[in-house]
Length: 146
Image (tube, rainbow, N blue to C red; front, side, top):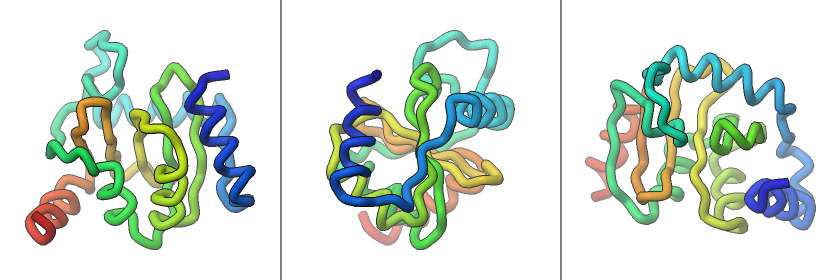
């Protein structure tokens, strides 16, 4: 099992966050299939999914992992790790997403909703990327906070 997956599962268990639910590998694969069709150039063969994103807005922000939960707010979200890890969790709110991220290693992660209307990512180069409905949210957040 991947070290990041182990750390996330450890955090969920130690903090008794039973309302964070792990997705199956099939659910994660299916979500990435849809996200790829909506937001990525499927012809590119880069390892990292974020390197294939198209029509996105991004900002470099070392604390960008904190920004995404703030934008999510009180809405449910889904956090996914890189496509090859086939791991994701359904999280009831941005607040709980923040707590989970704060309690685990730093890693590349993606956040979306059930409808996959948006995609946000924090990558290993300290960039926050956003597609779909999220670019305006991200632009507005940075206008107000930076």
